[in-house]
Amino acid sequence: MEKVNCSIMDLADDIAFAVHDLEDSLALRLITKEDFEYQNRTARHICLSRLKERYPDESRNDLYGSFVGISLATAGAEARDQSPCRLFC
Image 1: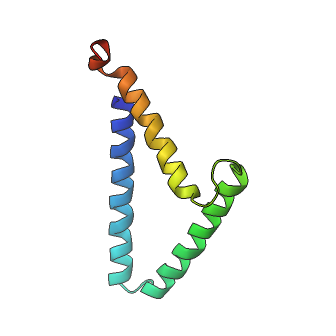
Image 2: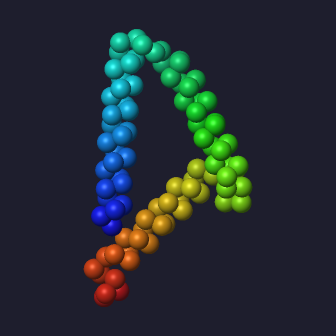
């Protein structure tokens, strides 16, 4: 479980830094909201396309939802395996 907690904290830090950098970039007018929205749509499309190519049988329509579900199920199983309550459940 500690491994999962550390991963979540690392991810939260990365997200916080990225959001802060984005806010600064918008405030300083280094990028526009429209530029960001376009780049976001483009990057999301590329990422999802690559996931679909790599895991064609994993999902029919909701690749992202399936990926998150699998990730959470795996994390939950790891947490149960390492939990002290597993001795009593």
